[in-house]
Amino acid sequence: MRTLVFLPAIILPLLLGAADTTQQPFAPDLGIIAPEDAGIVLYDITAKKEAFSLNRDKEFPYASNVKLITTGAALKHLGRNYTFKTRFYYKPETATLYMKTQGDPTMVMEELWLVANELKNRGVKYIARVVADDYAYGEKGSIPMAGNDGTGRAYNAYLSPFALNYNSVELVFLPGKEGEKAQVFVSTPGRHFILEGEVMTVKGKEKKVEILSENADGRTKLTVSGTIGTELKEGLRKERKIWDPLRHYVDTLMYFMFQAKDVVPDRARLDDSLFDAADGIRYTHESRELFLILTFMNRWSTNFIADAIMYAIGLEKKKDHRAGLAMLKQYAKELTGVEPGIINACGLGTVAQNLLTPGFVMELMKKEYASPFSMPDLFATLPVAGEEGTMKKIKADYKHEARFKTGSLSFVAAVSGLMRAKSGKVYLVTLVLNSKKKAYLVPERDLILNQIWQAF
Image (tube, rainbow, N blue to C red):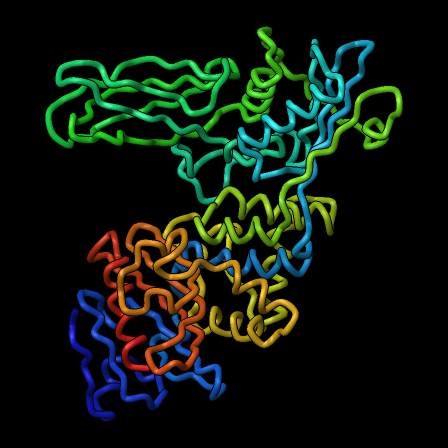
């Protein structure tokens, strides 16, 4: 680990910028990062003052730290116990299943199995037709996430009201004997996927596997190619997007209903009163509470959930999913006095998008920390260093001593949250690095955080 560098007070401002007037005799070793490519603010909660800052008012791409805004706005507008609801109504005379939702980004195949089991337990034996109202997000039923690059990668998955497994699919590749075909498994069961191509087994640890994801008349066609090494005993896992989310949802539901026949869903706008009718079979599936969803979102930095929550805010408060982004901005402006320049709720985008200043992020956290009502919930959703999610692999000295929301893009690494320093004092911390010198900046991020933990 690099040693700390302590410089005379007359030299320190020259390195950190004339705008930095804090008096702490602390100058972090930034490694390969130039001083102008780092933003840091450290706030002493006990003393109620900033203990250190660097480029406090400079704009940086903050990546998934944008989810701090999403978390706070969601707790304010929806409440910690909010649930996403999906309503089902089965009409026995026509064997028609009607479905409607404003979106449930947490629906995974295990939950959908429970839905199918509940429908069967209530008397649904056979489904001849499915009619789905998936218009909550607009006429097309699904839309791309803002900031995506349009490829078949899972992080570019469509957002849709009827979503399953974050509208993505995982493929698992297991090597065989050298020179033989590898085994390929599609994680989601059912008839939705068309799997073509082959991956060969070679000697060593090679994992040069490609997956082409295409739309095949509503189904998702996956074409695999490449090689995988014999030493990869646990195999290789990769994810790709789903091209028709509603079809994928219904195909999987029919599989869990033990129906051999494909049912291509019809789309229609359905009045809520239909789902209250007494002459059929009714069921409403509810997700887990919002607090738990936000904890999962921040623990694993799930983009899909973040944007879906933004849409839920717009739908619940303005009857328009598109209003969600403006409400996130307004929430942040009410706390900080500044409207953030964000394009989505998840932080996905280029290094010229979702620009925030370290000062803005710190003011947001200070206001939330000072609120006895929202503070416990918001900070409890952040993963603990060395224990959870995106912070689990941390092995630095501050392990177990911080709750941080991480953010990472190519050439960007950020963290914001709480740290209990070596002294035992608690600080609010925000740190962002944006340097073209290196695409993966997490080691540099952790180097600086460890120095902060040691020095304070």
